[in-house]
Length: 197
Image: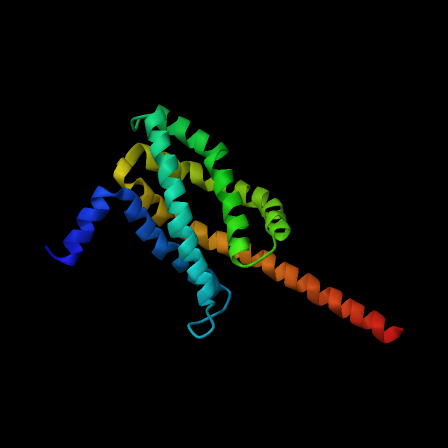
């Protein structure tokens, strides 16, 4: 039995591992997409940022998403439209905000930001991100719950999340740019005051 067939057997038997493997590729790729849009290239990519995305995606997002999908499937079994609507509604008001809060908080902590700055980022970014997510993810969730077999739900969501994670990376970096700009403008303002006195 070759390596490929062994991996295929393991991933088929353990869908969580399949989700973790896909997220370990998709999340750093999303970071690279965002950095490319930002104007970076192979020499200037922030590879540590990519590593943080890979670690977070594979070790936190995949297990929590797998757990949520497993619980939802037990509570509302089946792939009917009714079950899909219920699961989508519950996901939109429970898992989605938790996932967004976790993203901003834990990614900030992984960047060595202090606790209060990590909380401030959650507070500033949660609602705008949630509004965008609430306009996209219910349709994706309905497809996932109604048309995709349970063993393939985490990989399907991970493929759909490629663009979404690029958007999250953009939002995350946009906050950093604004903070840096405020610091630069504040320093410039202080320097001007110092020169006048």
